[in-house]
Image 1 (spheres, helix red, strand yellow):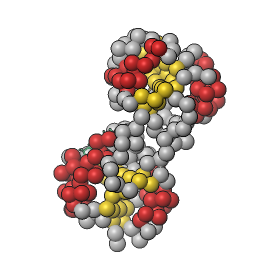
Image 2 (tube, rainbow, N blue to C red):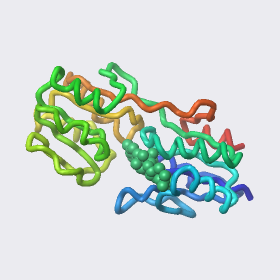
Image 3 (tube, rainbow, N blue to C red):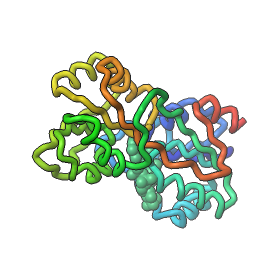
Image 4 (cartoon, rainbow, N blue to C red):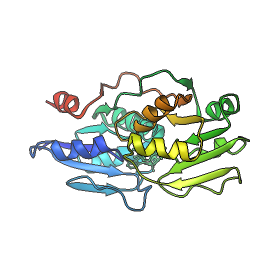
Length: 235
Ligand code: NAP
């Protein structure tokens, strides 16, 4: 029975774990970042591996045949580790990446560049780039609404934090943006239906959207954009 390791922490990873046929042994791996994670079906392990060497040792010990990197498009380190560990151990690797957002945006290459662009775009920003990396915004002098799943590091007084986990609705996002008189939205190019309501809301309110570009996928690794595509690659 082939063993598939799914590097997860996303809705797609959970969906993949639930639809892989019983002819596979399926192990899902989570980083252990959030206190109360949504657990995938089947076998689950939680916590880092200890870099690419640790992951390579795990692949050998568990006789993993195939790795599916279904982590978030911005989880750069684990993806690089997966590529290295699979190359070292001669395992097959596929990347599952949902398509990015499409639309007319102010695209920036980094969170830092996004922060620098804000004062020229608005006076009241809605920052939805997550807890990690929020430090890039602390020098921004305009008023900022920050939404994260868990409490971020302490922020300056011009920042207001709300804790919430998606999915969000367009109506809910419209209400939130109107209530706080938001005039610029910041997001990473995460893609996916869970988080795109804010883009529709921003479009309807005609406010600019700053989108931080994704880091590139390791060259040469096959990429699937849907769970069905992964199933086809596995077959
Ligand atoms: P990262 O920076 O790429 O990874 C940092 C370290 O966390 C890795 O080196 C690895 O530790 C451990 N790790 C990450 N994902 C893991 C997994 N699925 N299983 C076991 N260990 C894992 O990752 P991140 O951006 O902190 O994201 C952490 C997790 O949250 C990911 O699984 C990702 O799918 C999920 N997530 C991330 C974002 C985001 O915006 N970055 C958003 C939503 C969900 P070792 O080196 O010790 O193995």
